[in-house]
Image: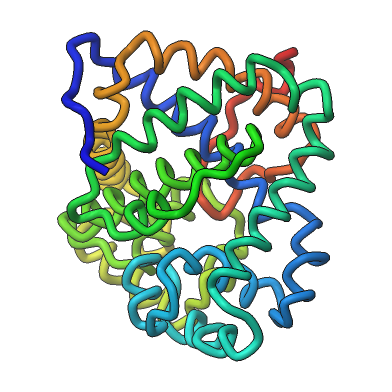
Length: 302
């Protein structure tokens, strides 16, 4: 798809960040939903991580694990290689992608309920999100391109999930660019997030990094003055990490500039009560592996 020309009423950065957090939480349900343990084993996928790597990489097709490691960026290659290409001896990328949608379908029906799923508010949110997702310029954004090439589902809540996947992978592709430009590798990125308290204590093992990997990454960052030798963040490190996030936000802005400030504000307003139900139900933990901070007001939103 060819992205539309940006329009003049550009959303401010705060609105863009708010929308990212809301869409990321809506999307993240797929990574924590108990329905995963129902649908993924039916394909023969063994264990949670094989299901994760197979279903998230499915739009790429049967690419080598080295490609998945490169695009996901923050997992140790040995962890990816334990799941791929072995997963494709049990199932296909097409079946894995379909199972992922079944997980989201079941989870959202449980979390949101029939009344919300049939509401005009959800339908409008899906329409706006799809519009933004289809406006993503794709050069240099391989994961976003793979996800945008997937069919848009018919069900409204799945259309919103499709859009959230495109937009979060578009932002993720840009985040990889920002990290690489700053000279921060995958393990170092997690050391920084851990130092800032954005991820759970088990983040190292959840991304496959060894104690040696972690210690060496900490030492490299310490030599740059970004963390102290014990891993605590420094003022310089916090500033540099914030710069990476600002670059990421700027690289994620194009589709939101296209749809405009009014549409972004409307989408934030529509998503807030939906995501509040997800947060209140405890469907996405805080801290979480994505490093998405909690939005406190969502827990009390109606």
